Amino acid sequence: MVIDYTGLNIIDIQEMDLDIYLFFRREAYIHFHSQTKEGRDYLQNCFRIDQTRPDRTALRENFGKKEG
Image (cartoon, rainbow, N blue to C red; front, side, top):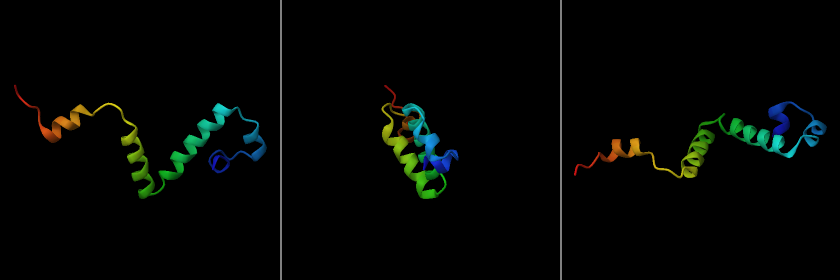
């Protein structure tokens, strides 16, 4: 996947520092999943699950702000 995404050969990939390789792997994963509707839905769901803080604006829009 990284080879297809970067266009580099296997030797260049093997000589990369680990942090650079992991960065390209992450970017390639996102890129290839963003090509289809199902993949975009999957990525959006991953983003939603990863969030640790509530979206207060969206909650207020859906449930209204309680007075009092």
